[in-house]
Length: 298
Image (tube, rainbow, N blue to C red; front, side):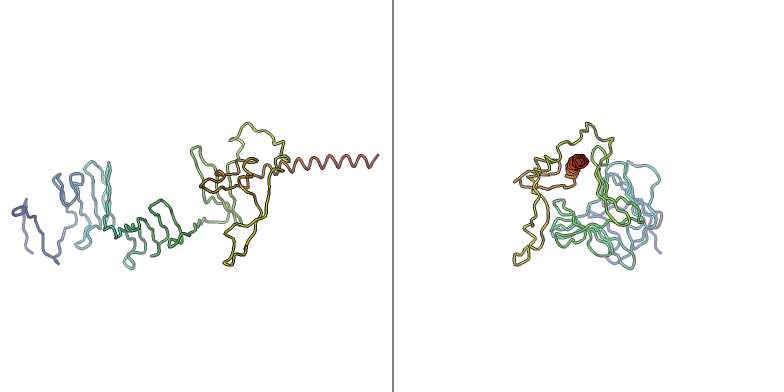
């Protein structure tokens, strides 16, 4: 094999230096390094002044590739199947495509090189995540996340936990700490909100349960969308109108009447009032029973 040794190769008339022609194989031996002089070049400029090629084969550029920022120190290096980006300060990777094109990262093996994907679609401005060669999650340009059925506006979330004992699937946290959970056991699901006595103060027994309960107006009705193509009602339910509950149990209602956002109701917030009213009614019944018993004995 011929060998040329030189300390410097300079382009003629500033046209650039070319290694080989189309179809040629350029071999970089294992353990060799390519460094820049601190000025912009094909490897990215002053910040990217270390380009290690240990482990490269002559056909798979990027296998065992270590790109190191000039500010770093240490012994991080790429093995034969790793790409390492190392920096003490900012470092990024940019992928550019036409406005109607796509940028993507594929995950796979020799049998299937794109079984997993992260893909950005420029034309529709959305990011998609694929497993088993199928799109599973879509994040659109407005921040909406669709899971499951990404081809339409419908989707679902599936949470799997091992075993049949109590398992936390979702933990809700705000600035003060955990405030609720969704848990499962062997046969049911529990929706929990914070209720520990140590979180509460200024407790006062509810003494007007019956009076407030009488202000609630339960109805039987159907939602406007619960109709078939002929306009026949397909389902009726029991419930309340949110704006009528708001003056009685305001903490059970979200939103304002006739605002752009539809009002909602957390009917579990009615349970304390219902319990108090029932207790008051039981007390009245027991008092009356005692009076009847006294009269019967007279």
